[in-house]
Image (cartoon, rainbow, N blue to C red):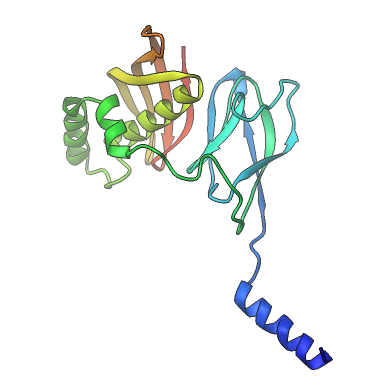
Length: 204
């Protein structure tokens, strides 16, 4: 192949592939050994770049990710590499369950109607009201408890939805976690939601 043809082939290859997207890094920490959620675009996968805690950061146990971000728990603190522009396989690529079905199982219609009515009275922007925050909390709780081995969950009650700042809420719920052996346990659950995304979830 001549030098001119080689150059032409390289030019065509670059035109077809386009510019490469750079990976970026995200710090996420489980302060006080609590579950923490750090929003990120994880569609191409996540790798742990540097563990900064003495507690092990173990994928699927003390850290993981879903379509909306990275979570850490149990004292894991680290820097995570967010992969860009790759077709890396990921067990978190797409949710396997319908979002509306999950929400219907976790939160009662009556609770959602009350929250939506309050959002209308307060003039909150669609997508960023208290009802949206509770929905985000429900999805985060369902995903996290599934990671811990729960068969299903539901919010027995939404006890408090406290506005903390513009589009930010602290949410307290009574959470019932059901396990494969048929047993169920009741917990106090807490979520912090900012701009429609859960930044922290815990239950005790």
